[in-house]
Amino acid sequence: MKAYLVLEDGSVFEGKPFGEIGETVGEIVFNTGMTGYQEILTDPSYEGQIVVMTYPLIGNYGVSDEHGESIKPRVKGFVVREFYRDAIGWQGGDDIEKYMKKYGIVGIEDVDTRALTRIIREKGTMKGVITLRENLGKEALKALLDGFNNSGAVTRVTTDEVYYVKPKCLNVAVLDFGVKKSIIHSLSSRYCNVNIFPAFASPKQVLSLNPDGILLSNGPGDPKDLLSILDNIKELLHKKPVMGICLGYQLLALALGADTSKMKYGHRGCNHPVKDLKQGKVYITSQNHGYMVDAGSLNTDRLEVTHINVNDGTLEGFRHRHLPVFGVQFHPEAAPGPQDTQHLFDEFIAVMEKHRREKQYNYA
Image 1 (cartoon, rainbow, N blue to C red):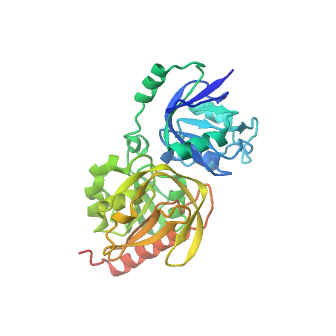
Image 2: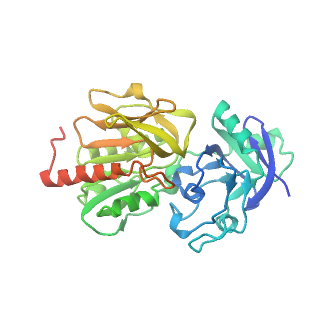
Image 3: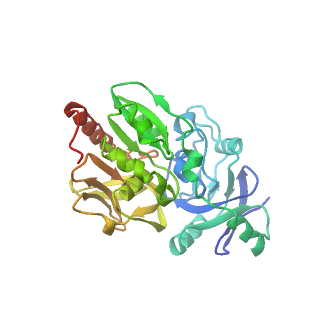
């Protein structure tokens, strides 16, 4: 049986189906990670996207319950060069094909992922379809692509109600735009009582638990789809210490008067070099985003640039000069790795502890 990946620009790649046998449409993106395919499959930031893996062999160590970043896979489709069957997870899980069938994830293998990635790099992110139809036709393709819209992605991945993780010392409120399990673990392992709130929770609801700090999580899609919650964020950042990660960082920037824009093909992978300007060090980071904060839009009287991407010079982090507020574009929890920037959670802990000792900052 053959399967086909058809891009918005008309490019067609032939391959073989695996996982759920069927048809799916989504935004085509690529990830450069050599490991961590289960974390990628389950990362809520991939909601609505068909992920192309640039590493040529996928599936060789199976899947495990320990490595899911959410309760189920979030990708719309999975594209690989070579798929390894029958590998059982080293902690007793399934092989990846059973896992994908269980959750209805359509896959295609035996694809020239190198050539495919070059197209995405040259032409930018675009929509695409994985199908079993050999001759899809322009009208059918157009109908499928026009029927796909990834707006409202956060609504599909956020929690429906507040839940709590491991009562400990500090109280952290997490606004869930598509939070990864590893972010929750990174906080709870640092003696935090983690309270996860729906993305659209009101400031009154969040502050009712008197948290020591607020984390704006990662998530999928365009931050400007969430302009309705910027007033909520503005109110919170004048009440408590705030840390933003990925989409949360972009929303924090918008709330502070900066602007965001869509990147040509984004940053997705676990090998992106980022320079910490204060330390003068370069860290290797895990990233997954298609939008960026425009460096030129920052009010430098209020905001200080802290991190930049070594490859393309894009903004990767900032800190407020007066408020206990900061954010980074990359993923400090790093699942899959590397672990270079886990210290940012320690910095957040230190800010919250200072806030607790001093009772309040002057947030004027």
